[in-house]
Image 1 (cartoon, rainbow, N blue to C red):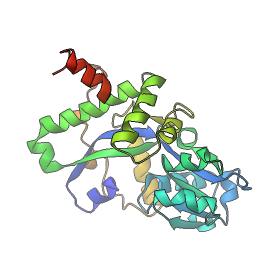
Image 2 (image 1 turned 60 degrees about the vertical axis):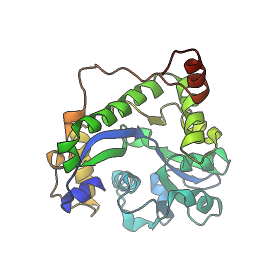
Image 3 (image 1 turned 90 degrees about the vertical axis):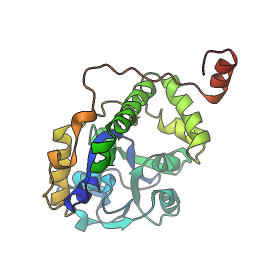
Image 4 (image 1 turned 180 degrees about the vertical axis):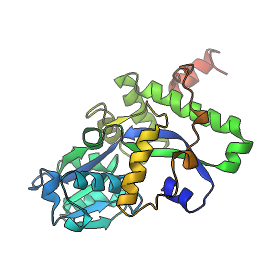
Length: 259
């Protein structure tokens, strides 16, 4: 979507990634679908026309000589997908987590693929910033990019950190059961990754090509048009965040260790 907006003249640039992988395709546990080829003639739900999961589906179909014409493609909000799969309203669903894992955890969904296995290094999301902000508030953008990078280093350092993350995010950000987030962050551990978030030209050039082939992009915007790599630190100077949950932070403040 960020590339398409740039093609249409919206003055934004991608400055960093949010995470890699973190998507899946699910079928019903009793389904006869075991391979991409088995999707022929089936109903498959994707988040929207410009979602990365739609592009991933296009790429997977292309690899076996199929196109979107070989199946029925539906656009559906990801929170609605698990129920649609459960009721057999669709044959397969694909979106970002944790909605795919919900069907697996509840016992009726089966993984057809995890993105890490079919498109290694899959870009799940990006941080896109208006060019006027890049020009006038570089320090703020740099702090944001550094914060994402340092948080990612902390998350990927240890499984205990992932479990802390699940609890913290469920309480403060996501209206999701922490058990579901724990599942997403551990089954398997590399289902979603938060490091290696630098902007790689070859990744985006592949997206450009697939976007053009699938009819989403015109091919008029290229890497240097929509990416600004100047905020990515490559000298290894960043260290991970030291995470403290609310209780630990309050205890530390009581002891005068935090201000």
